[in-house]
Length: 63
Image (cartoon, rainbow, N blue to C red; front, side, top):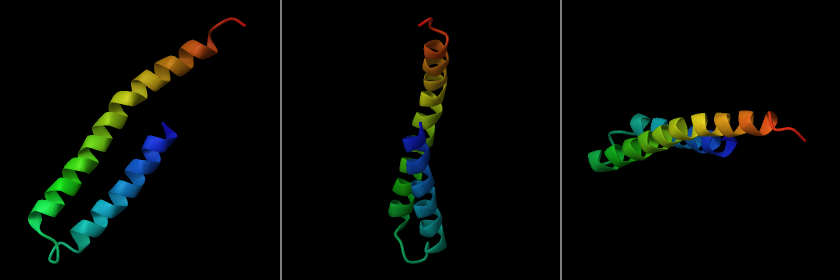
């Protein structure tokens, strides 16, 4: 979970830089970077409940 959060952070900073320099980049490049960032966010949102479920299940198992 921490790794995916770090990847999203880096990707979001890169996307911000893309929008700041939007006059120098093709529109297609900006669209792809946005779609990749959106895909990372969606996959992390899907992984988070699974991670939470597995963590809580492992903590409640008797030793």
